[in-house]
Image (cartoon, rainbow, N blue to C red; front, top):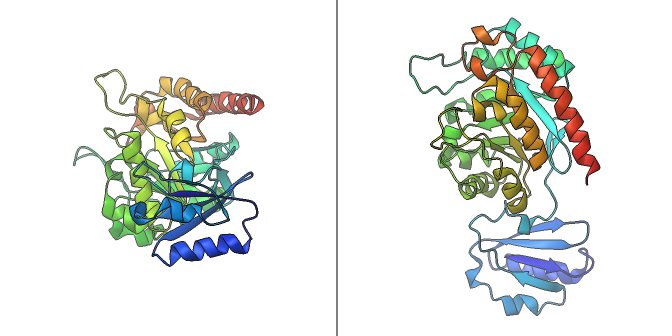
Length: 336
């Protein structure tokens, strides 16, 4: 339920309304926008009488939210959420690029990539220490040693890091990780999502290959319902009948999500295409569609990569893409 408040949020009349709602065991979320203040009532509001709430002097309007996701709903939070990642802001007009290798292989490899990611304008270093692989015989990552290498790169370059959590058993190792990534395979691992609601750091939530945008938002809702509002959504392609690309980038998901939710939305053109030569086009299309950022795979020697080399940009290609990304980003700002 959403309650639009009249006038000043600080008035005693508003406080009286909040106390009245909370006395009935509901949680009230206060969202102060530029032009309006909204009270979001979380819980089974079917027992709340709209006419009773409307009778309070502080109330301008009352609406029930029909969608099953509440806290992630833009109706509950009109202004875009800005997620702060150790000083790097994403959402609400702030656009950033996360980049790095699919998997951490060696210290030298990661430090080399981190240096040129920073040099060419990347704001966050990505890299997989724990790797989910379809085949049990494929490289599974360096695990805790990989995390140590990423943290060394963070120390050397100052870049925040994002890496994937595959099991709650490893959550204690992620204390110094800046963004915890939840991959497509774990998007509906609800036990994991509930625990991440207790973690006070940003979560990068990737859409599953066969999940709808509503299912993605409901997964975000699990995290937010637990108390963590720092969620970044990621469109990374869905499975269709097309076989030329690894997945099909659902570019329409970007404006759809921007309409439905206040959470930042980024795009992964590398996993969507599976082909390095398509990353640039999909990255630029994502910016034009309104994305708040990109997550791109880059490797200092893609041909020798232990994981996803075919979709990884080398330094030269990454630099070229970043030049165009920055130009289009500035052009899009000029249109607003």
